[in-house]
Image 1 (cartoon, rainbow, N blue to C red):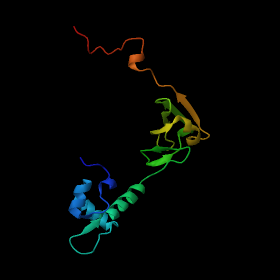
Image 2: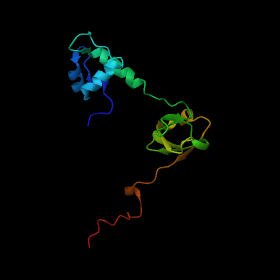
Image 3: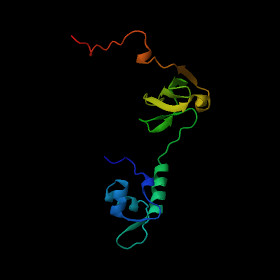
Image 4: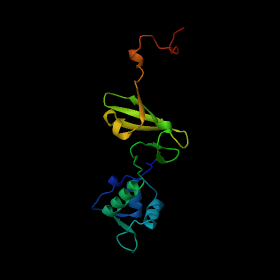
Length: 158
């Protein structure tokens, strides 16, 4: 299955591509390249065959990918259901540590009630979530660190 978004770095800067070559290079259908042309991708010339400059294609795809970004301002997490950065419900955020420097922030969306997550450095929590109640939760012990044995009895020999 091809990637969801075409990677602009797969296109060589100093090469000229036909629509079929460009589609093969990026792993998309040639009609996708024609759709990009209708949406602003400029060919080298107006004649046939339609040829595209690698530098122009890379700039077009990079601009197109950058327009989809939704940076989260301070005090918000990205809600996948709403597709917008949203503040947490009741101003409550939970942080769980992954290692000594990084962790995950979790909160409930204020609008739709879905869980939102954000990966961050632990030292940056104060600047990312200003004036919010952030509760830092310690991660549970790993299976190998537990004193009692695992309750998984599938491996018993009868």
